[in-house]
Image 1 (cartoon, rainbow over the protein chains, first blue to last red):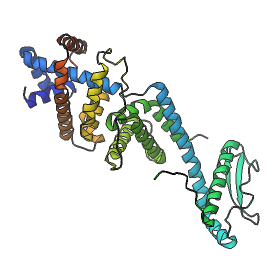
Image 2 (image 1 turned 45 degrees about the horizontal axis):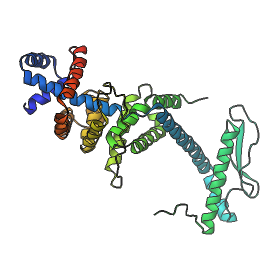
Image 3 (image 1 turned 30 degrees about the vertical axis):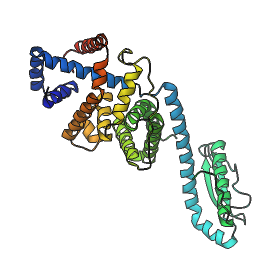
Length: 176
Length: 189
């Protein structure tokens, strides 16, 4: 069997052979047992590969677990995007406050939660204030949980910034 | 109010993740690496979701996953260790393919160049036309045909001895099953 003949057979199996060539191939398959036997071999190889690829599919449970992990990551990313936007908005003032007081831009009391109910769409808010109590920024949330998570993240970030300023870093992994 | 883009995005991801994981695994070889690939692809798409039309998402999802899989394989520090084949007892061909055969096929496919493997997965698992495969792999149609042809020949050579060593009756049965399936599909290859 030539490489060209094998190529024609595979192209036909892929459904990509033109109509004229397909008619010619079918005529040859009827007349040439060797060609027909080769086609059967190619089909068999293909069946085995199809079975292999089908077995690559995860189960429903595995897919669900995977999707849960991805959703958690996306939720985390959403929070941090929000957080980034918030810190950018207050960043210019925060830099001044950091120089002025030398201890950071978030007030000692940290973020305030929850505060005023402004509207049903943003019933919860986190306010950030400096040491003098001046409000630097306000972020609105639809639920207390979202506001709490944001507040926790902000506190965590604040702690990290202080550690960096004070010159100590915590190494969380022992593996290098 | 919920963002309609996010809703469409989430629906698309939920609907297609299973097949996308299989595509990724067909290219990168292991379940863990496939999950990393798909997760990264999803996160990248999420970041730029506003740029895309999510009413017809499968093409975009496929392309992103394949590109991410190929990128992962090109990363020098990445080393993949083949995990156990899932080896389901019930395969689409009625359980005729045994675990040993599956293992051999898996090993043989893992040895193919990455583009051959990607083309094969898209052609034989996703049943995509050459022109679509070429678009996803950023190649020409003749190039895709060459990859498929060479990939299949390499696999054929690797498995030749094994297929021939199987008992004659078993091979005939497999051929008969394959033939019957073909006949039932009539003129369509």
